[in-house]
Image 1 (cartoon, one colour):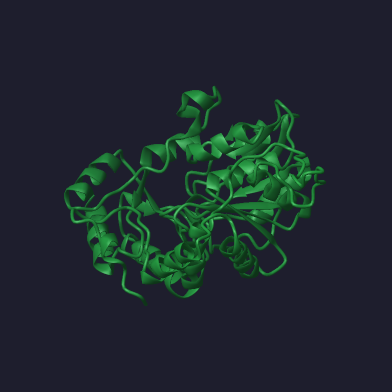
Image 2 (cartoon, one colour):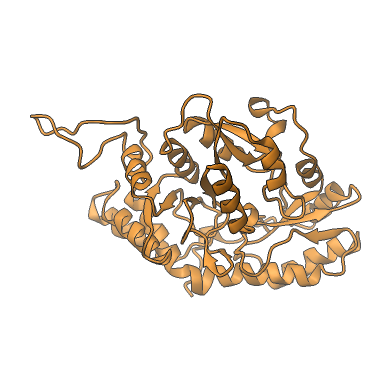
Length: 376
């Protein structure tokens, strides 16, 4: 294993909740691209897409973009929704999910979540259905895809497209199947603190050739390589588009991270989560959310009961351990306010706390954090 670059050493004032793990190999990849003189979307991006397609089993098309939010945006836009069309989505997620739906041409139809997992409550989603709903967007909170068979059965029953927000779930599996290797449209994030990073980046993964082609064109301002050309050689533009491409600088970092993932990055995340679970097994007021070893966790959320969450957060902070609350529900936000009741999301928001989880967290840190939790 390469040594981490010195500027990326653990923060001097404690252990962060999340951070990337970069090595000399990523720096060398960036230097290679810099030396080539070509920094835009080119051979590195194409190679990264090919390597990701292989990782997902070889039958999927991969469209790399500049952020995970852009990936979701393009996935929604590729469905050619009409004004007023809606997408079922859990209220308990980061605001980027809602903004991607809006900018992609839809509107988020918020649903409650199961407080044990943070995943969409399909019984509530069924109640929230109406004719305007055209798609469902499950969010794989903390890396947990839940039961995707249930999601796809629900979607088939109601004639809905599925866009998986898998920003947290790179490397996770559902019943032995790698997330992204199956399903309708799956979107990943490669931002600095995700399971793999390209600095900033994301990907749309699908077996649907039309969705892939639309996403490729729209990430490049609607320019399609196979579109007709005018007499001066310039290409025609057939649909709206944005400047969402992934540059080679980012793709080069992503390629190194992908090569390191199964042997290095994934095992540490899984092992740390397993240690947290083991050492919190006897805690009276603190319990991890439900997910198993098939999940490669992006964050380590726990529930802190009896209104002791903020007390635990202060005590951990004083000891040098940063924590976060992921996330404030969407129906709290003025732009997406909803008069419906979401009791599962409200309960989870009152109790959830994300503990440090990344390759800079030592086993001794987990033991110390668990001790604070067990003292409540």
